[in-house]
Length: 334
Image 1 (cartoon, rainbow, N blue to C red):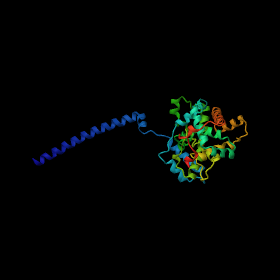
Image 2: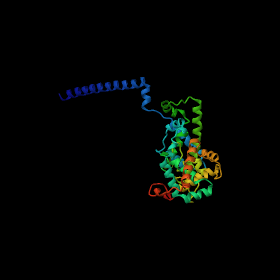
Image 3: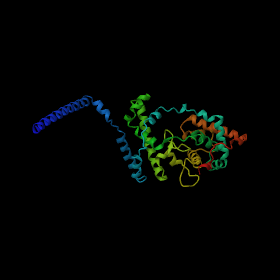
Image 4: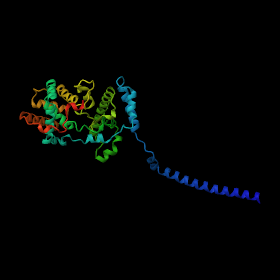
C-alpha cells in the first residue's frame, strides 16, 4: 500500500498545479489584452516630458557660449541640482502683464512718504555724497529705492536662476500649451509667438550674465532671490544692468545689491550713464528714469515722491518721529 499511494499523490499534485497555471495564464492574458486594446492607459502610466531634453540642449549652449568665462563643471553642477525648476507660469504672466494697472499710488501715501523722508534724514551725509559724485538728486535716489523695493523690504522671492531658465525654455511652446489654454492665451497668434521668442532670447542672454556673475562672486545661484521677471537686489537690476551699472561704493571688491551703499550708488551710476544731471529739466529727468523702468506711471510716481521729499526738506519738517522706527540705515548691512 505504501508504494501504490505515492503515485496517486503525485498525480493529484500535478492536477492542482496545472489548474493554478491555467488560471494564472488567463489572468495574464486579460491584463495584456486590456493594455493592448487601451494604449492611452499604457501611455498614462509612463508619461514622457520633453523638459529634460530641452534642458540638456540649453546646458550645452550655455557651456559653449560661456567658454573661457565660466567652467563647464560649474554649469553642470547648477543644471544637475534638484533646485532647478521650470516655471511655465512666468512666461504666461509676462504675456498678460499690465504695467499701467500697477498700484503706484500706494507710494504716495503719507506713511510711505514719511518712511522715505526718515531714510533721507538718517542717510543724508551719504546721499549728499552720491548727489555730488553722480549728479543725481538724493530725493530721486530715495524715491527709486522706495518704489522698487519699499526701501529694501520687498526684493522678491523667486530664485533668479529659475526665472531665466524658465523664460529661456519657454520658446518651446509645447511646454506652455496646457497653462496657456487655462489662461486664455492663444499660442497660435503670431504676435504672441514673436513676443515669446523675443523674451526667451532675452532671458537666455540674462542667464549667461547671471551665471558669470555668480561664478565670479562665488555665489550659489539658487540663493539669489528676485522678482517674477528676474530683477534682484535693492535696485532691482537684471544681470546685464548689474554688470553695466553696478558700483562698488564701499570698496570691498564686490558689487552687492543687497548693501544699501552699493545699491544706491549703482542706481545713481545708472542714471548718470543714461544722461541724468542735476541741471536737467523735469522732462529730461523723466525720460532718463523711464530708461530705468519703461513705464510712464513709474517715472511719474518717482518724481512725485521726490517732489514731496524736497517739499518736506524745504519746510524743515521735524524728523523726531523717525527715531526708533525700523527705517533702514546704510550702515546696517556693512
